Image 1 (cartoon, rainbow, N blue to C red):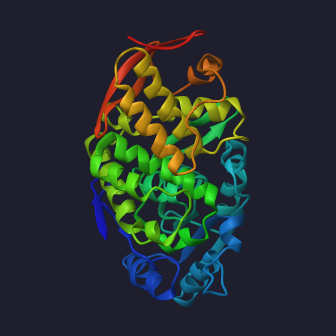
Image 2: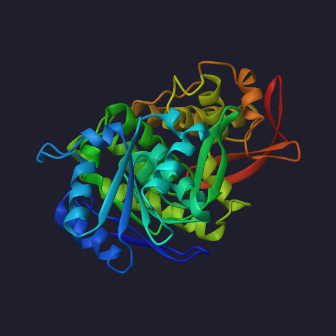
Length: 369
């Protein structure tokens, strides 16, 4: 399966195919074929400790080793930097070490960076690529479900600072995205559930059929039934994001709908100092809480609230926030969607239909206006 995203900096392909990043043949057909169109000699792989040791049960090599060896066999000079898995590695304080390493390895603007990992690796590599030497090309090879359906596509890159998550970033698109759903076979159950939160989001904001198919499958782990449909699930999710990004590449309006559940979710992550809930888990709670808030103000039907809660539970996700929304106000107030003192909240009034509503944030909580 292949999508082509039209961006201001140029079009790029999103390839969704089992084996395209975990087999030497798949890498050769897609990644190396793409690289041969470029005049470069050095490739810098950024990955994390999980991907550096994980691989398919049928392979004696880890995912990063398969990629590294395949590139070296094709004649490229390959360097690899392994960061500690987890959100802490995306802190701005870790950038200088990567920049220094790129410089010492002699990486130039004619070379390329490959992000092999989940959302943290993709965000970090993308921001490094956007800023090192004022811009160097990079490739996304997402290995988590959340990264495959969301963060690897669309050109948003960012790092965290002490004040909050993703507050320093850039719009910078990859040259190509290779999505291999085979890697999801080794994904921890918690990470699978986290990714499914984003898939459910896409169904809620734009695709009733996708949402209803997820209701029918409804399990909280990666079994064969859902794995067989995973290429289609990823394709439909990426298709929705592609269309929205092409209409609003720089997040000045319509692209905000992709943040359904994220405002409260980010506040919850920050409240717990990113140590209790991962991104997908927090987004799941955020989707439920903002929908419940809308119901309390007679903006949506109770049936929608219950249906959302039920599907989240089916996929092993919590729906209700463990803390009152009023306690998250200080963290929500730093959200990038706060404009002119108002908060732009994303609201799904019925499955497949989404809108942007203004709200006030105070010590009492959030109120639509």
